[in-house]
Image: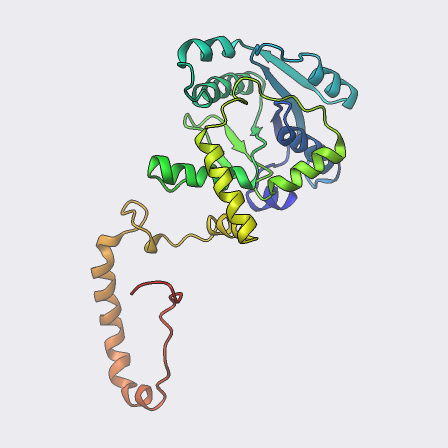
Length: 279
């Protein structure tokens, strides 16, 4: 987490960081490690834990307040009945996560605006990011995922994901060791047919057969060559002819002067391509 915070400049001097706490293993781990880093960080920053009580039936309202009070962490619980809204709007059997997420994000952003929050910290981890990459590819036809650091669409909030480098299996082990009082999501936990679940199973099977594949996929997100993709908005394919002409024009004087030396000392030149890449 410290490496990710440093690489993406997630937390700076004087930041007031809102840690979104759901009661799951990821958000508990996020808060726990941020509290540890806060004690040794070279910059001073505040932490406030915020939970959104969505009025789910059977939600144990006392668990998070009791835990945070004992921990001595400043916290606030937002009460908003998104559960009833989602159940009314989404037909039975359909995915609830999209609407639930939008309502939850709106409530959290509103609290951040009203309370001087400079960074909104979410508990997404490396596996979440890789899963989202494939979800966007398979079901949206887009090459995108959840970035470690994001400016919200309205330009008013910076969202950070300090656990972007952390595999889910390490979070699971950490949460068991720390014995966090986990609260399951009863709103959507029964939706086993979700597309994310399908992608998670695919990645789990890959990882079992080819250990390290998920890490390699994540590494590719920080090693992007836009000229070898197909987005004319990200790379100027139309300008390649002009670049080629400029290169040839610059090389002509040197080519004439050093032609004999090149022939005498010619060596094979690598194309820079991998063996599986086509010309």
